[in-house]
Length: 324
Image (tube, rainbow, N blue to C red; front, side):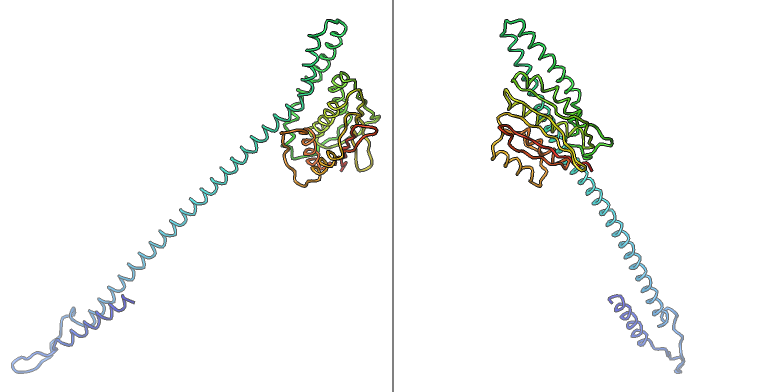
């Protein structure tokens, strides 16, 4: 609007000035018209004003377009930088989260291995002390034989420690091929039989036929290991039986002992923990950490666990696996 006002003002001044210039001139007392120079004509001045106006508009338009393009370019640059910063931030957050998970995983892994290997090592240390204190050659020979068998099974156990790396990372809870659950029971029986024998306890495997499963073998091995470990620790001069039953849809692993047993309150507490819908990584502080890990792993493979009192004393633990 200011530009147009300026142009109209120029035109008005031009016309006003032209009116004050007389087109007539006296010559010899006569009057004759004089043609003014072109640059003093209204046409010239109007044309000049229009040309100036056009030049101003073009300059203004070019400047505006240049600034608009530059502004758009700057906005794109800022947007790209923001996108890059956002991606970098998200990547750093992901790396931070992965490092935290990896640290927590390594901590839990070490604690789990330490827990599961404690009983065999403690047993070997106890027998070594008895050998040192005894002068009876036959008794020493018996102790050496137990140490040898337990050490051999402990060695086999350590060879399979790589299985423990899957306990908390494993996302696929099923194997590609079936395997016999009996194999796990037999391996754990050999590992704990000498420890149980020292306490006057006998472990008996009652399974009379092979039962197959596709549930993650490493996880199921850790579950059976911890249940049998608890049974051996709490059974003196008694019996521990291992058995597997199956139906068309499910297989059930039964580990029963005649040991100290669990109170009604303890059973209710563990069953409440199992029914908790949250799948939390077990805490390794305090008592009962083996069963806490068992419950965590049972929930991980979508299985079921049941604790009940044995008759006349002891505990029965049942792990029910889905076949499909």
